[in-house]
Amino acid sequence: MSADIRRIAVNTGGGDAPGLNAVIRAVVHAGIRRGWEVYGIEDGYDGLFREGGVVRLDRKAVRGITHLGGTILGTTNRGNPLKYPVKADDGSITYVDRSQEVVDRMSDHGIDALVAIGGDGALAVAHQLSLKGLRVVGVPKTIDNDLAVTTLTFGFITAVETATDAIDKLHSTAEAHERVMVVELMGRHAGWIALYAGLAGSADVILIPEIPYDIEFVCDKIRGRWEEGREFAIVVVAEGAFPRGGEPLFKQTGKGQQRLGGVAHLLAEQIEEQTGHETRDLVLGHLQRGGAPNAYDRLLALRFGAAAVRLAAEGSFGCMVALDPPEVLAVPLDVAIATTKTVPLDGDVVATARALGICLGD
Ligand code: F6P
Image (cartoon, rainbow, N blue to C red):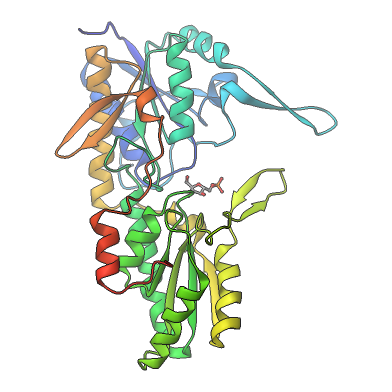
């Protein structure tokens, strides 16, 4: 089957991840080579709701962006058109469904298909829009690597590299001061970044949401380090990790939202109290999302972008591109968003951590 396309659009939704610009560039080049016009919707779907928010992307517009972090189109994780926030004069917020408006505006712009780049939230929106008749191909993005059906999401490996570099740096200061350093990494409710960076950075303790931890085991490991004469320790903790019988910690933001965070601080207090060793904590935060994608993520992003255009040309809509090495395949969007991919406890990466004597908190 081949689709009758003259004009496509691309947008980026949710939190940014290194590699977004490389996907955009691949979509633009691959689309233009097929004789299509390519447009970019700014700030997720917000660009559709304002004048000038849908911009023509020609080759010049995407020149020299493969290696750039962020997204030339802008993004938002508060612009879900199915639950669009509207602020009243008194400051209160209500939510309205603007999804039909999205479909109508796309049609007003003469756009025949959309390449929607995003994580689970943005892809769930893309799925709903496709049920409303919009022709959509999704591209999986997130540093968290928690999207099912794709072996990897672009951005993840770069985030792991950034986190590993931070852990390397923490080693020298921890050793110099004979301290325990507890570093909190992103990942939401999956421990991919913490596990991979913790292993690559030779952490002594790695705590992930998939394995609720026991503080006693963590402290035993740290005491053992001092007994061996290695008088410092590195603890890597995923932001979604929690103790046995407990819950992940959230922080309330000024805007009434909840955000994961605070577990490193809590752990540091407990470790210092129970072991007597000076303990410091830090949150690596958005450093993990910023900066240039590494070569692997650039390549994956370019492959995803080119594959999305191939699928659109074939008329395969309502699906997402997915890495199934060595291929990039199409997976239905409803399947792609149905489950979260967490770290398998019987997998070889967890086995490797255990074989190296790393404490996983259990
Ligand atoms: O999903 C990506 C991610 O960076 C998570 O790891 C993190 O919990 C969240 O986004 C942070 O979101 P925000 O940028 O809205 O603080």
